[in-house]
Image 1 (spheres, rainbow, N blue to C red):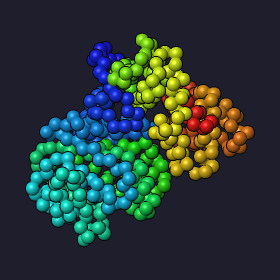
Image 2 (cartoon, rainbow, N blue to C red; image 1 turned 60 degrees about the vertical axis):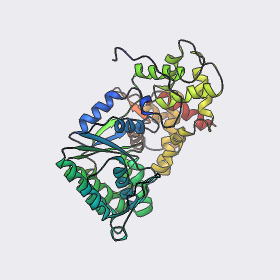
Image 3 (cartoon, helix red, strand yellow; image 1 turned 90 degrees about the vertical axis):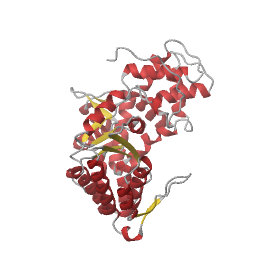
Length: 394
């Protein structure tokens, strides 16, 4: 438990937006653990969408030193192996000054690298486009050699990796997606001066199933779950947001914000931004109603839509129907044990108990649900269950 927190600062509420890294609150201990773990292993950082994985990577990239650097690489929208290769190398080139030897070798593979007022633009030369993954491997091995000689360490923090793999599967086929995973595994094994953090809100198990890959391509990764903010830091963030957005509030407001939002930073930003924009006073007795109104406003809370849409992409139709019914039941009636849950759902689904267990297990792995040691199953975050209820009812 944290004994003493700093004086709250003024933080603007930007739900779903990119905050200044100085406003990324309560993640320092996790970041220390990630840096320590990265010295010997690569990492898979995961949790449900909108919990702040990208913000953690941005903060890590901003706090690097001369010997140990972190570069954040967004793979959002990357749907081919060529784009993957070009994105990683461009970001590496833009991020740090590479040695002349590395630049000369990269120029043999790519066109571009001219630095101008605008963004750096590069593209694979025609001769190397036939196998972009091999080209990426060649380029990273060359960079790794130089880092090793200079006794430097580079952490590649790649965001939205599962989405990228599934997009490659959709556009180029499962073989290319499997090959991508295999190349990444080989790079992790053979280049100790390069380490990786792979993040994403889609469980890697969905990726492996859809592309027909085995666990051997990912079983070297150390698993970290992001989670919400620790309670004292969640309250500190609420105090910062209340100070920074010209919102009228009473002394109980920040505690109630934490209770209603489960300490999820995005939701704390959402509540305060909604009160600010609606010019309403926030108090301990109206945070819940403001939260509900914000969640029901599709323009304000559109970042929450993934709660409803991601099941359709990763579950087959029958499984999606059962998963939705399970989430409905637990959102409406709270924690339940599996036999009681089976009984409550039997009239609408008629599926055998083994299907219920399999889908519950999937929903736990996908961070929707949690299970206690005595067998109670519930939503992992009550705030997200409330958003689910409101959106499904509308």
